[in-house]
Length: 465
Image (cartoon, rainbow, N blue to C red; front, side):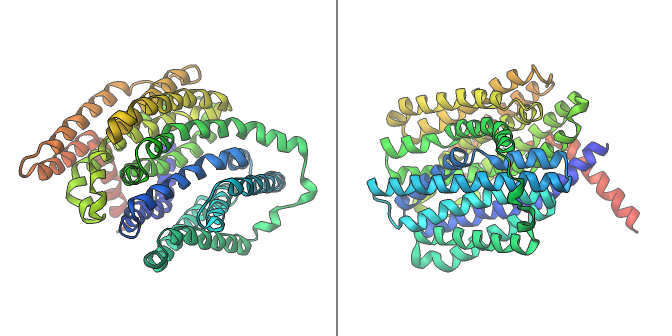
């Protein structure tokens, strides 16, 4: 009961923080479609995808080492030691990236390259420092950071978007990151950096933990992002813009998964020594129903809502949204299973499982995207992430016997395809039928959770009077 209660509380805290991230998908993505052309949006999406691969390559996911060490032991001297050594690693990473970026722009023409450089540096800083806030201060500081950062990006793009179009995105990220640095300064973060504590052996220890995770991040990039380069290569930047809009909306499922993932990660770090097999399996079984509920709602309501919030030149993205959503769901469940690797400190196994599926997606992308277009890209994405989920599930059994979820998973997937067929039938009123079915299906598979939640709310209300 205590485990479930604390997990719920942490999920609520992280959920509040992720409201800002949801705002990006539900407000910025539509804004992008009105202010950017298909080609501009396709180009920005490629740059954003490049950012995802650059961060682990140059910074070896050092922020995950910070989390692992500090969440396990919040002794002040250890915090200073971890942050001081991580700071040096980040400075070296920024220096190497700057050198590589300078070499690249000598050979490739990059429009407004300085703004692109600022965009990359801004995101590097944000990725690292927000995890520092989560580990050193509290999850509430993480929440505040998310809300401030995303709100600034949204506000700046609203101000600059109509005039500067694509440039406005890079300007917005730069301003948001500068604001984060100011916020950290007033928190007194600089007091945690002591250059006297820098130790090469300890740096190696931090990197030894995080480097396999950076390899895993590269593999996950292959799973989620590599198709975009194949689309741009064999189709057009405009086609990648269409795919990007569909993927952004589908990726809301992964953003919601982050809420659960971070709270579940914190919980498993603290109780894993007890080998909580039943707790993990029971929680995963319930969580699968929650994720599928979001997928059903996305599928059932896409034709009723999304055409009114994006520009008409991007409405073709609705065709690919549900299938991509299923692929994102498979990926999200696989990432939750990956928490077991982190608890075991077997991050090389996480890399292995994601690398195999990532290579499958990349190879199949080259084979099927050219002849079958975005339909081929969407199906390849789903298949590759299904392989990722199955392989990771089988592999983690050697550490923890996760069980009891497959029948539910298969039944929920079948319901999804029925709902997808309903949305595809071109008859009057089918969109409304699909929306009603999505609500009913979501309720049925989560009725126990909803009843328990409602009961707890009523008990709290009664006790407050």
